[in-house]
Amino acid sequence: MNPRPVAVTATTEIIRGLPRVRLNEAYTNALACAGLIPLIVPPLPPDLVTSVLDAVAGLVLTGGEDIDARLYHATPHASNGPVHAARDAAELTLARAARDRGMPTLAICRGIQVVNVAFGGTLVQDIPSEVRTEINHDPKARTTRVHAVDITPTSALARVFDTTHLTVNSSHHQSVDRVAAGFTVTGRAPDGVVEAMESADPRWWMLGVQWHPEELIETPEDWDRRLFAAFAARCAAR
Ligand code: MN
Image (cartoon, rainbow, N blue to C red; front, top):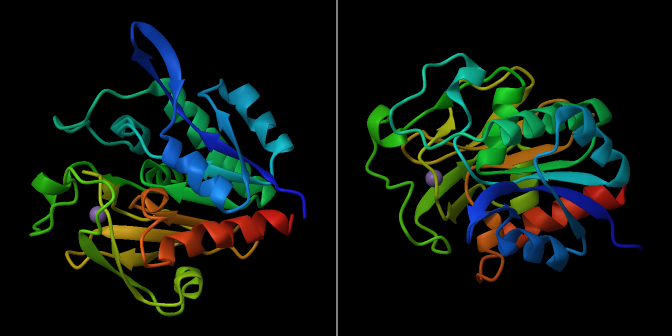
């Protein structure tokens, strides 16, 4: 079977004095390990970015900046980092276009938040100040499993992982709050923070996770490898 190309969103950032397109290599490594060809997509204007989906079999929405709170009709919290308007616009457009096409979509960290906002959901803007919790969702270590996630037994994710109890890494201070219509929360941390969400529409395979599976593919636990393998299988079926 020919390896399928997938679109992988990226940010832009000034590095050594020049604005550059940037993506953590862990994403492209994890996708390549699953037999996919990752094609990095910069924050293109919405009228152009939709056409990217003509060339790929799947979409990966990656981690990054806080989404502009005004896009979900909230007043930005003081803790919000600098927003990236072009990236917000491109990724919201891609999420909606992927659903229109029924294109397999894997949404990671900021990605799960993008999907939720794209379809009318809202976000917890700052977990430390808005959620009563003992869990540090943003420790320094990116590749360490630091908290549990309970998965809904009847969910697509439970079938992917073949378990309903995982431990995951965590690198976020925001999370899904009110879930958008058409989606189901299927994973939560013990403090109730939303850690996974999936499309309730059988015509659109979309799994979203708040952790970073791409940083966990070399651990003894195979859950995160299984997530990428499930995505690859969906892309291959198109
Ligand atoms: Mn977390």
